[in-house]
Image (spheres, one colour):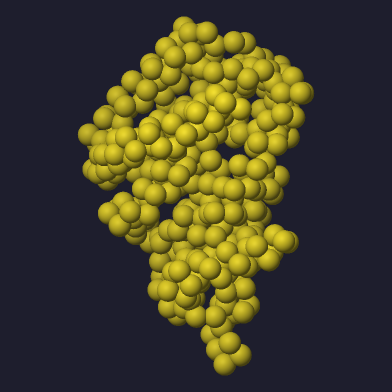
Length: 360
C-alpha cells in the first residue's frame, strides 16, 4: 500500500473516531490559506516532514478548502522566533518544540520533554489527559496561542564524545554542545556547555574546540558524520527520553475558523504525530547498523553519571518550581503520573521488551 493511501486511511479512521470533522463540499464557500513557519530545516526530513504531512491531511479532510503553506526554518522567520511570530500573528501557525522557549517560560518545556521525564508513549498519554491538556492550554493562552501535539522523535541518544566517559569526573571541563535543561544539568556537573549551530558541530569536534555534541538519534546523526571525529556514541539521551513537537496557532485566527475546520486541524495534527513516531522507529533501527559499521562505538553512560545527573535534575526542578508556579503545577502532575505509569510499565512494556531482548 502506498504511503499516501495509508495516511488517507489513518486520517479517515481518526476523523470518524474524533467526531468526524465535516469534509468540505462544492457548496462550502469558506476557504482558508494559512502559513506555517517551522523551526526545523528540510535536512532533517522526518522532523521537518511532520508539517507537510499535516498540510496534506488537512487539505484532504477539507477537500482542498483549508490550505497550510509550510516554510522551513529561516524561510519565513528564524527558527527560535516561531513562537513570538505566531503570538503576534506575523504568521498563523508555528511548527516547533516548545522547550526551545524555556527561557521565555520554563513551564513550556513540559510540552516537549524534561530530562528523566516520560518516554514517548507516556508523554503522549500524559499530554492527552484532560487536566494536563488544560494546564498546557492555559500557559499557551498567555501568549495568545492554541497548541496541538503534532510529532515525536522518540527517545534520542546521548551524543558523540571524542573520549570515553568513565565517571562523573570525566565531565569536568568537558566542552559539549547541548541546549536546554540538559545543558543546565551538565553545566551543574562541571561541563562547559556551548551553543554551536548544527553546521558548525563537525568542524568544532574535528578541531577539538568541542569535546562532545548531542544532536538526535541514529537516522539524523549518521547523516552528520559526527562519529568520524567523535566515535564514542553514548546512550541513553536522558535529557530527551521523548521529544514532542507542536503546531501552535494564533488564538485570534483559531477563533475565526469554522468548527469543522478546527476539527480537521486537530485530526491532521494527530495523524502527523503518529506518522512521525513510526517513521523514526523504522529509520533509527535501520540507521543504527550503518552508523556502527562506519565507526561509531555504542556505549552506555556509567551508572554513577546517570545517578548524579538524576539528582542534579531534580534539584534544578525544585529550584524552578519555587520561582514559577506553572512549572511547579506541571512538575507535580508529571511526577504523579510517572510513578503510576512506571508501576504498570515495569510489569508490561518493560518486562516484555526485556524478555524478548534476552531471547533474541
